[in-house]
Image (spheres, one colour):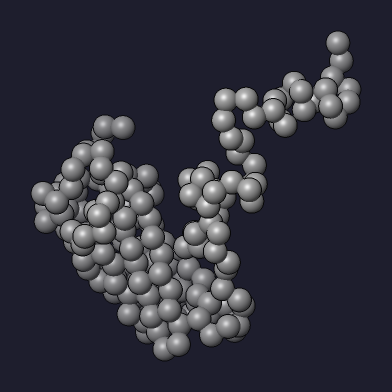
Length: 177
């Protein structure tokens, strides 16, 4: 039997039939927590909140990640090794100028919101709005419980520009999934 109509294609793919749970397409009727978990949001902008208005005196564009030294981005907060905190390409969205004189700090918080580690990211000399900090692995390791979730909260400020980014990561030993 050919699948030659839109109704047949939807039926064959299961689209439109949410048997067994919620779908993954953006749906404003779903709770904000579900949309955030499903990835229906943007980095630094929780689902259910709006993005900053361009030119509004505070819109900062940048990327944020935490990585083990010499490794690509990891979905875990590794227990033991030093970890790099990257805040890259901080720039004013209104006039596209890089923010190279800011203050950039971060904290690692447990599930109760208690700070278990804090540090600062220094401006990378000669870069375009890049900042880098290091989480000292041996100092942080005793504070982490394997398989527990922690939030890395980064705050950036320069003049009238403020930005806050968060990552929620699971603590794990390297080599274990």
